[in-house]
Length: 209
Image (tube, rainbow, N blue to C red):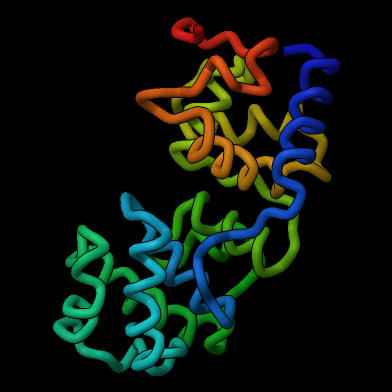
């Protein structure tokens, strides 16, 4: 994709989704970090239903760190993979207390050292909480960037760094969210709406049309 195509891409997405933000409901950086860990292979809607009850009982690292795994598992059961997620969010709360005085760090290297936190989760927090430029590579971003010819890789880390090279830094955070919105509305994994897609002319997806 050339620079003109990228300019068209960014302008089209900006016009369609001018104001984008994470759909995970949270009041604090810790709550967003926890919600993002829970969102793995689960919808934002379901996570929000779960965290409403979870954060009512355990709103901060100190409270969650003291919670029993049994109680946590019961509350997050419907997000799937609840055994590992329960262990991770409890361990993450403990690590925040022990290493960072209960505060969520903004540094990527420090974030990814927390239990249950990978680059995707870290970048969500860095972007949504701290306003730092970051590209979050989820399934939507991975799929759409491939279909548009922005990358040939299927490795999330390689896709992240590849996009960082060709997308202006000022557009990084919005692009990730715009791709998520676009994936839900137009570029579905199984049945993309190619005939009404505003990016049809710059798309290289072999199945389009």
